[in-house]
Image (cartoon, rainbow, N blue to C red; front, side, top):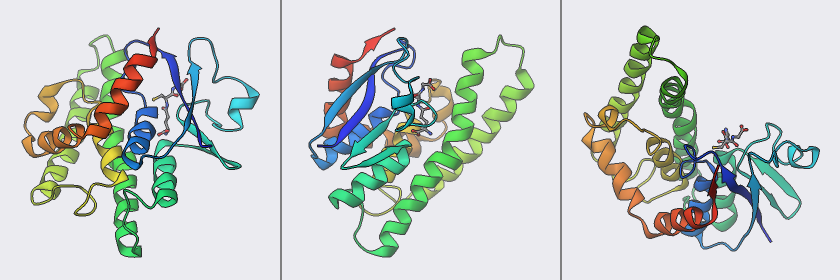
Length: 213
Ligand SMILES: N[C@@H](CCC(=O)N[C@@H](CS)C(=O)NCC(=O)O)C(=O)O
């Protein structure tokens, strides 16, 4: 049976936003059975030789499936989509579009948003110029994303795919709503994807299970 490594206990600020949710959402959409291995972050469950065989950077999520050890949320959801034949088109061109937008979510949209989040967590307010640069970088990506989404329901194909899961999870990490407010097309894309019953089931089960530290 597919084994998914997700948090059982994690920092209260990160709880509800961790990347195991990308995998758990995908599995809910795909209706694939799995067993969950709960990992306690403060107890250093990730810092063992055994876990590093699954996840070299000692991070969540990872999976073990039929002899295959995998980490990296994007690689995992793409693998699960190929395995299940769900949330990805079966033709090569459609699959390529999904891959393109999985990379865009991880490599183009997430970096400025995550950098800003980290700065706001860690800075003492003395990084005005750095913050201004990161806001400008985030704005540029959100503006271009809004243009792309103008006549689209989903980002990669006409149907919901794993690329939407990754991108929406990245967008849902925006803590400062003022950043997304100028882009109502991006906000409504995020909100209609988060209204899906599979996301609601995934986040409810997560909140019932994962303890804040
Ligand atoms: N690129 C990785 C990043 C994974 C990641 O940052 N995981 C965080 C939780 S969301 C983690 O395990 N942090 C614990 C740590 O680094 O000690 C992915 O997308 O799976």
